[in-house]
Image (cartoon, rainbow, N blue to C red; front, side, top):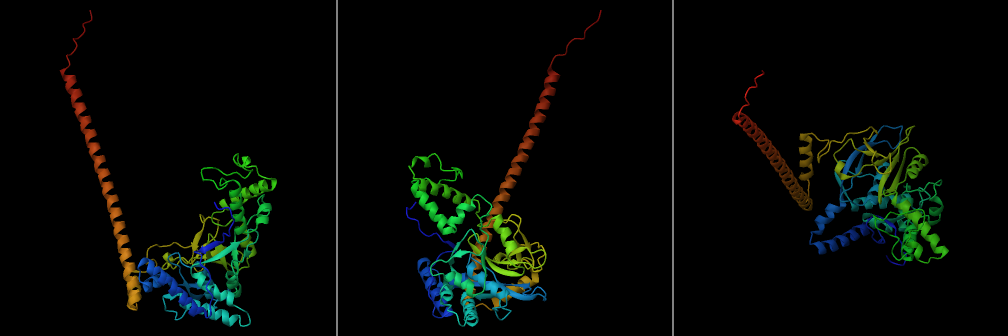
Length: 442
């Protein structure tokens, strides 16, 4: 491990340096072209097709009440594909549900990054006329690939600014609260240490420094259990000063806390989110190196819900929100727009009848451009290949099952035949054996 501690900001997707914007939508488009050109030169792929696939997202219609007392309204939310830009999609979906931006016409089924970046840039320019929003605008292209976020373990809305701090400015000037639940319980023994390291970057830098002090023996393999009681037998032989020994002990606590929260959410953090957020609040939740739309329902329930934006649920009309009930998702449930538990149907055209699925497919393919048709053909080809692989897999499995059944039947027949032969042999032996003479009682 390197001896020098370096910043270890958590990336929401991949990390890219911010590119300054003169005009948000124009610069975002040019930055996109540069990235796609580099990728196409490396892979030989058509840049137009690749850009279309990665930066055009399908829209899903849901209903939502911006005002809990008003009737529900229809909204088109953005779904996520290819493990895409969750940061930007979360920002846009919150602004959509708040009725701050609108994707028109309502009948459209997809939207591009260029169009959305223009809507967000116009919204910021109109709502912050007297505020310098250059930092927020300059970070917008980076939202397509990732944001540097450095959460503090002691506050649900506390993040250290990364770089020029444009990431946090973007949320601030868009009026979106950025929260997380990776919090340490003040009543826990870990709090004293983590209240000093405070944030993720500082904590990781401490682990790096202690690994150097212990000559690379601190970051051990999973097979070597860690202890929070103190340094191991190997660590006691390093001639550490009292100050260095204290760092080792602190690092053990930090490592235990990070390892015990793999989803970057603790139960204390989950309860603190539920009790701290106001009812009917939309916020951006950082969890598991991902940003999602968090909503706290109004009323006595006051439950926490995460907006479901995965494209696999595009046609699942009954899957709109996921209720957050534990830290690892084991007890989470899907609910519909009215927050009633749903039962997903599954499949590419879930929620469609046969007729509506065919009509939807014809509508999608009827208005495609040449690039879109190429995308559609590529997607169809990949799907056909996947279907062929699945067909071969199930065919092989069925063949193996039939062979096993045939072998079992053959074994059963042989066993019965052996039993009959043995029975005939015993009968024959009994017939050929000389009988004993009758005993005469005198």
